Image 1 (cartoon, rainbow, N blue to C red):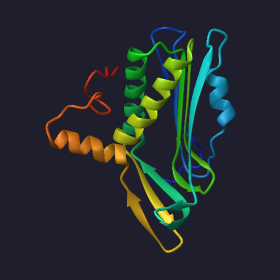
Image 2: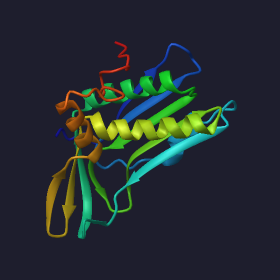
Image 3: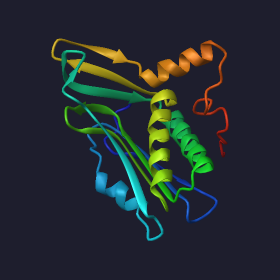
Length: 187
């Protein structure tokens, strides 16, 4: 993994100036400023902001967790997240979306992924926020290692495993992965 001490930021622009999307992948030693992303999606026409904050917990399956470590293929991760956001916009009426994911070590209690979605009504924001995190975990090339007090292991997300099993059975998932299904990839 490249040693980049600054954040790698990609901001995607939409065809309509009112539709804003911010996607950031933060390199090692950069924490997530939750207020920054909530502020990004706030606007006078939005009656709802839904957020998801994924944090490192202290135990998993009876083991003491010290930290999580994330690695990513950043260009593909950004492309996949952009496609997920475009798919969410095609399904729900959304104002703004912000997605940020950390790379490197994330100690217990700290945030590794944060999503903020604004819309006129809460149902759209809540449903889209859940969709975005589920799709990120199922299809974006970001890998997680759990570091325990007595060892470490690379983990596959349950959403990824479910998607893998669906594809193995020849069943097309609802979204088709980060670049398939109803997702429109804009170049």
